[in-house]
Image (cartoon, rainbow, N blue to C red; front, top):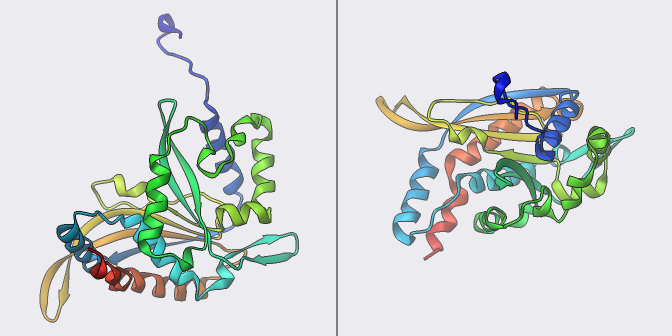
Length: 264
């Protein structure tokens, strides 16, 4: 502490150093971004109806993850990464979800890998996210059994991230498709431009109301701000556009929430 000098000097935690190393490495990627607003009035109504009937809250993040997994199934080429001169296409869809945790008094985003997401129901995905949030630990990486990550010296962090980005075992554990919901904490319409090593990265923004014309009537509808980022080394603009059309329609129609009608 340097009270007499008008400031205080604090050491960077391993969590901050890991974020800095990750951001430094991933900014080198060739990334294209899609900014979207999707009408989520129908799914939000179904979520509300389910809560009124059962008292159970449905996570919007889990719903987005479920929609993403079902869309990726039709675009297996997107569930891949480049290793040397080869494209490694993963058979199963593992989606990395950032979970905010309190580690030693610091709010830290930590990824969990939800494996075989294409085979899981919305409720199974939600339960995995919930269990991760409830897990008690003060070590980075503990959610995935990789607490040893915190032992890596700072000067090796960037090298480790570069190696891990091309590692098949790490890809199976964390996936090459990811979702982060940092923007949901905002009260205004907000999109974020993220950084990350995923081939497809969905950043969930805030929810706002927009007046739209439907059947000659002007109606207020809820719209979700989404930023979807693609590794341009793998995904070109045209297939990314077709992917977005299907992904947004999957979110908008709320069909994946129809299973809630069978829940009591």
